[in-house]
Image 1 (spheres, rainbow, N blue to C red):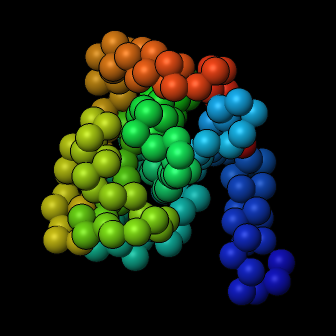
Image 2 (cartoon, rainbow, N blue to C red):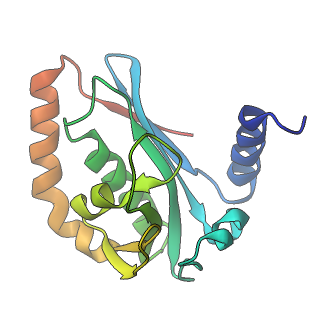
Amino acid sequence: MQAGKPELEKEAWISAALLEWGSCGRVVYVDEVPAGFVLYAPAAYVPRSTAFPTSPVSPDAVQLMTARVLPGYQGQGIGRVLVQTVAKDLVRRGFKAIEAFGDAQWSAPSCVLPADHLLAVGFKTVRHHPRYPRLRLELRSTISWKEDVEMAIDRLLGAVQKEPVLRPL
């Protein structure tokens, strides 16, 4: 791997995580076009997470590292669907929660998600910080999301012709 090439480093990380832990992300497609993605893994696979002032991630949780819904697809519930899909995957794997470091001062797309967005999709703050709070989503709470997710999917399907397809990484 050539140092200084983030795309190669990310590809190597995903390959290693897939081999050692299994699926670590999802991509959502609308009309065969990628509309968004999410990456997640246990904190042991995310050593840089210890640099956050609200670290560490709890041992019973998996870290939501990053996600993005591409312009043109935002505001249609895709972000919530991505989080719900991660939650379903992690429940099957026996985890109790998802945790993420949010950016309370978010102003432009970056690896760290806006804290406001995480709060809007059901996360709760577990460790406060003026810039990088740590947030948590209890997976047992995702059961109550069923109606919200179904409504988001209905809105999404009303805006596009084909149902979004989520594919594991």
